[in-house]
Length: 89
Image (tube, rainbow, N blue to C red; front, side, top):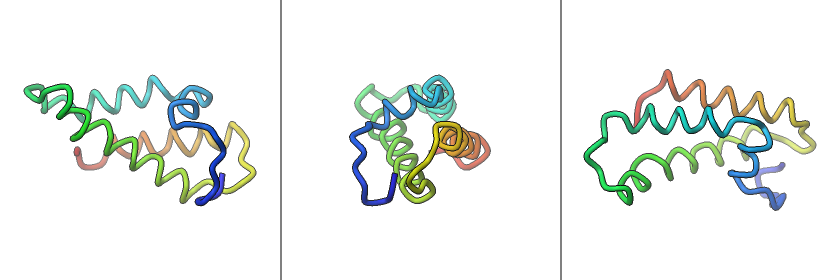
């Protein structure tokens, strides 16, 4: 996947195909833990969408075509892991 290339795969498909959907869910819960009073819409705006946008940009920047599934999984997993150690949203 090149930065400007549209492969037709959604971020959801990518997370599912790499087996990282559950790990991403853990990251979302981790980042949302101190925002329990927010409405569902606000939680999407403040936590979920920014994380997904960041991941998408990271993948576009870091992944070059062609990329095998093992390498793609490693890129996604590394990004999610780095966010657990970084600042919360």
